[in-house]
Amino acid sequence: MADADELAGWHGENWCVVPAAFGPPDEVNELCMRWLIIPGPPMSCTLVYQFAAGTPNAERYAYHMHPRTWSIHICIAGKGKHYAEGNVSDISPGTVFYEAPGLRHATAPDPGHSLLQYCIQYPAVGYENETVLAPEAGTLDRFGDVEAFLKVFGTGGKRYQSAASGLFKSARWTRYVTERQREVAAEAESAGAGAGKTDGKEADQGRMKK
View (tube, rainbow, N blue to C red):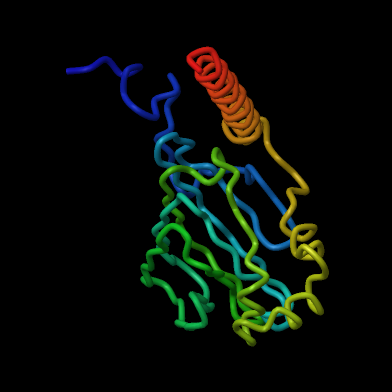
């Protein structure tokens, strides 16, 4: 049997937690709070609480996608909607739904209701930092209407991005998510630079052969 520190996702800490003892959230923005249950990689689990509001979902939440990430959501409290490529489904306690990589989607509590769900993702979105807005999908109530998206969220979805930006991040979130995002970005940049050098060498060798 492999040692614990050789197992994927092991961080040398005890991540076995009791739901009633989660304590303060690890990340807070204008739309929701998140608790980091399992940090990953390769698989993460967060508990997500989406705040109740009186405004329509289409004015608060926007279609987005994760190009390489799949996720499974398990609703444990509240009432809301799941939007996927223009299709709308009701969410209530016990609802389980899956989102494939590249699926344009959104999850939102119904007006006046909150929504609490577990979100299991692979690879962890927090590490990949690959949440991509989908303006071409329009708004939740007008699928495919780009003008509607621009009217509600502005160019580049700035109003949504501002609402979804973290107002608070715990030390644990910073350590396992924010810092890991920087590492992934640095690794990608280094890999790109290495590929460029390889291409350059191959081009030089080709010219020498000629």
